[in-house]
Structure formats: structure tokens, C-alpha cells
Length: 100
Length: 93
Image (cartoon, rainbow over all chains, first blue to last red; front, top):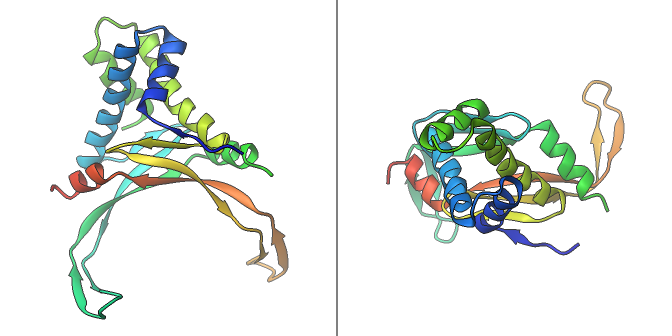
């Protein structure tokens, strides 16, 4: 199995091939999709893309952490983290596509 | 926000595009990510995050109701890691 890494450019290329927009416009639209998803998450909204998955923002409480090297206690401030829950379709495709 | 709202927002910003093309664009992007992961590839979107595939080793599981041992085969699962910029934006840095 040859593992590749796809980037924005590959997504833009797919849009270009599928819809026939110029590469430049395709790249702008990929960016625009990512921006809208990010902005919604930053506003605290969950983003549910049916048959893809759900991005949701969770608030984590403050807790005392420890520097594992020095054993020193350090406060960890309350923060918001993003979690992604893949759809059943995605899980199924990934499981069957990577079967050895 | 759901898929149709995302499509609507992109359509509103691009009045020169047909709604059905915007739909196709948004669907192509998400489908491409799934296809990549189905082939074992990663999708790295700087500032947003990275989608990758993680291998879960075979293990002996247990039926929680009966306590019976069952063998669970090795499997691959999708994984998303939030990008630094988005993580920082979530915490208004």
C-alpha cells in the first residue's frame, strides 16, 4: 500500500475535473468550504455533513496537569477542543478499502 | 450547520454559479476525502486539520452482555486531527 498525502491542491483538482471550473476558482471554492466549516465551529456550532461525519466543539474543564519530565504541577486552562465523529458510511469505506 | 446550509452559504457568495454546481463542488470535496482514506491515504489541510487512517490491531473482545470472549479482527478507522490554526482560533488566540 503506497501512502500518499493529499492536500488542498488535490481537492481543487478533483473539483476542476468534476465540475469543470478553472483550477483557480476550484482552489478558491475548496478554501471557502474550509473557511465556512471553521467559522461555524469557532462560533461554537456543530457541523454535520451527512454521510461524511460530524465536527463538534467540546468545552474541557480546567485541570491540574503535570510536566512528565520534572513532575512539576502546571495548571491546564479550560479550553475548547474539536472532535470529529465519522459517519457510518465513512467508517465502512475506510474499513473495506484498507482490508489486508 | 448541516451540509445543505453549507451549500447555501457558498451559493450565496457565488451568484455566478448554479446551485447544482455548488452542490456538486461541496459533495466532490467531501467524497474525495473519503476516497483518499479508503485507499489508505492521508488528507492534510493546513490550518484546518488532517484526516488519516489508523490501524486497530486484532484483539480478544468480550460480549458485554454475556461475558463471552469474541475475537475482533484487525481493522482500520478514520481519524481527524485538528490543525493548529483552527485549534488556536477555537480558544481565541
